[in-house]
Image (tube, rainbow, N blue to C red; front, side, top):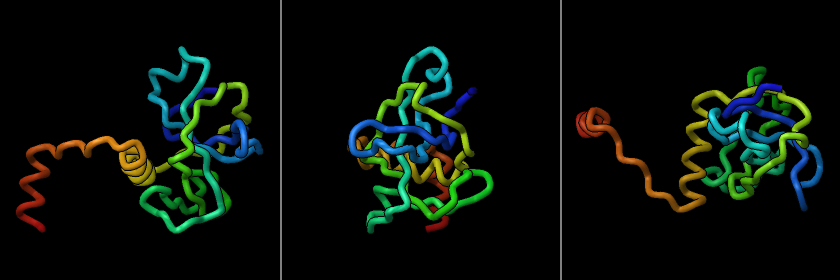
Length: 126
């Protein structure tokens, strides 16, 4: 099965997340094929009030989800490729942007600087 960043898959996570569940692949495409594991975030339908840390994703035909869900960014985990059962969809760019923002917050990385053209647009259109 060919996988890529942003794919939604069904996988079995270790420990308390041990049941088959949806997950989104975070790993860069160039690092998926050569490595035996993939970085992924589990997805849950158990919603908590933390939409910045746990981005909410609505079900669509494109992502393959059946219910409104949250990406559990704080539970990012490496998965062996053999625990990935099937690909069910792919996140839209807007969903990936919210997920990436949550990852930045979760691991305490600084926000990337805006390109000069975007800084100028923000000053002109507050």
